[in-house]
Amino acid sequence: MTVQRQPGLQSILQTRLRVTQAEVVEFCQRWNIVELALFGSVLRDDFRADSDVDVLVTYGQGHHLRFQDWLTMKTELERRFGRSVDVVEKALLKNPYRRSEILRTHQVIYSKP
Image (cartoon, rainbow, N blue to C red; front, side):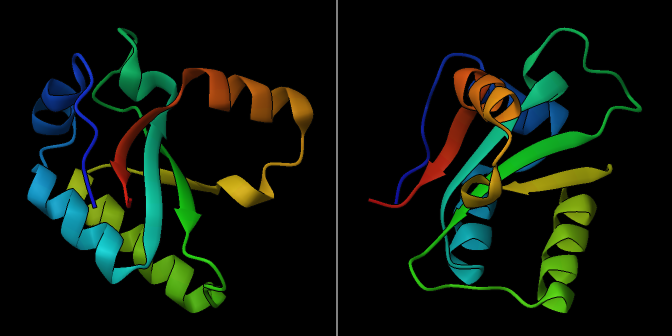
C-alpha cells in the first residue's frame, strides 16, 4: 500500500483537504479500497471554499458495499475533508465521455500494490 507522491498532491492533501497520508491509507484499508483518486476542481486553480471534492474509488475484488455502508463511507469522507464529497466508483463509469475525462485528469492519492 502506497500513497502516490505527485507534484502538488501533497499540498492538496494538506491545504485543501486537511488530511495526512496516514489518514488516507487508514481510510482506504478500512474500506477495502485498492485505489483512491481525486478529480475535478480540487486539482485545479478554480477550487473554492464552497467547492465539493470529487473522489474516484476502486474496491478490492469481490467487495460490494450496501447502500448504508456507502453512505457511511461518504459521510466519513465529508467529515474528514470538511466539505461535500461526490464518490464515483471507477467500475461504474459507463458514459464514455465522462469516463475518458475523469481518467484523463484524475490523480491517484492511494494505490494498494
